Amino acid sequence: MIKHVVFIKIKGAASDDEKLQDLKKLKEALDALAAQISQIKKFEVGINVSDSSSAYDLALIGEFDSKDDLETYRVHPEHKKVLDLISSIKGRTAVVDYEF
Image (cartoon, rainbow, N blue to C red; front, side, top):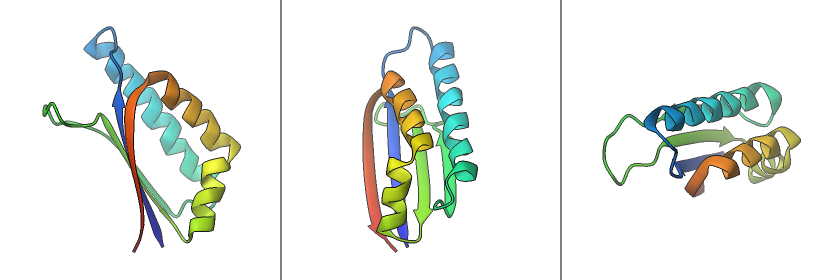
């Protein structure tokens, strides 16, 4: 099994409300992927509630049966649509994929 962990930090939004709207839109798009891509075994997306300056804004944790399934997810057209959305609102990401 492969665990796919992603942290996203949103770049400067005009306001906290705009940032929250961007995060909600992104969470909704990511949540929808679980029903669209059969290789996803488990998918969890959460918006950060911490006030820490070092905290990221959103976390994604996905589980896949294999590296091949993870790669199928990465190149899937629906995932690519979400990547376009992420690139339009992100500041930086951190990703870790590991076997468990």
